[in-house]
Length: 137
Image (tube, rainbow, N blue to C red; front, side, top):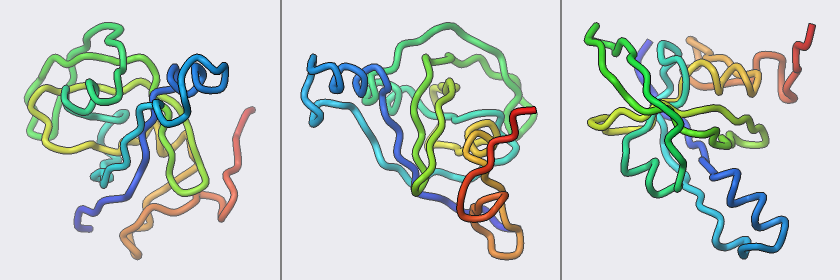
């Protein structure tokens, strides 16, 4: 299967809450729509420092992770970011790699939205059809 990208929107949830509470205007909520590389081998959402800064996400700590070429790199972990794909959404921490050139749409946010990769169609699809099914037990 070849690589492919999906359009997702990333949103700062603190800004969104502040907008709901009237502290900032809705137009001030920091959001980015990106064509993210679908990467089921990536643990979570991966971005570079520039993307993190544009979204205004706080750094909560650091972590070492193995990247695709087998190297171990240290990156930062952010506070949760809200991720939207079509009519679905989830929130998770992002892993910030300084030299990453694109956003990686990893396994954790895809699982959070009940999504899978269709190898035949080479696209992201709902694991249980058009509406997400939350497995809670």
